Length: 251
Image: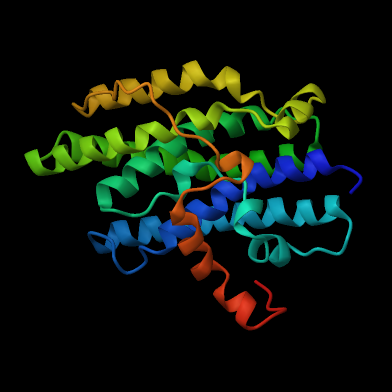
């Protein structure tokens, strides 16, 4: 492959949206109320729309006739480069919202910087996607505050979700070798520079929500290198079922 690092870099961005979109899609028809159910489904569709743009570009970069469907559906578990955070299951609505919020704050900051990429295609995708992600971040932030500053039960569940999911946040700021090459080429975003801004924004929101910022310094990583939790395998069995059962289907 002529530009393998660019290909891997695109996957590292797109797989987060692909896997999180699939997780949200699992909630279709199971939300706490109709309005919220539709909102989560729409966010899922937004993420899948973003994924298509990334994978269409990845297919061109690969230059070997791979389609967006091949890239999305026909890789093995170790070939997906999403962070561990987005593959965590929908334990309850608080976990779903907590996972979404912790990713949205990062995603918005990331796309803000990706707009400056010297790669005109990635820059254009970021400029298109950021409008949607601003809404995603506002939606999840509002729900964190509603649950955290709500009933004793909603507060407890929201705090438990944050305490559990916190361990996956630091991986957002780890760099793979492809990331480092793309940053040096002016294509990629140096995510290490987003870390302080991220934790400041998250902490301030949690304070508004009357929640405690988790104090754990233990963090898990591996997803960016293809080493995932057991949850991803089950998710992929659902995601890939139709494509593997009926080959050559198209989105």
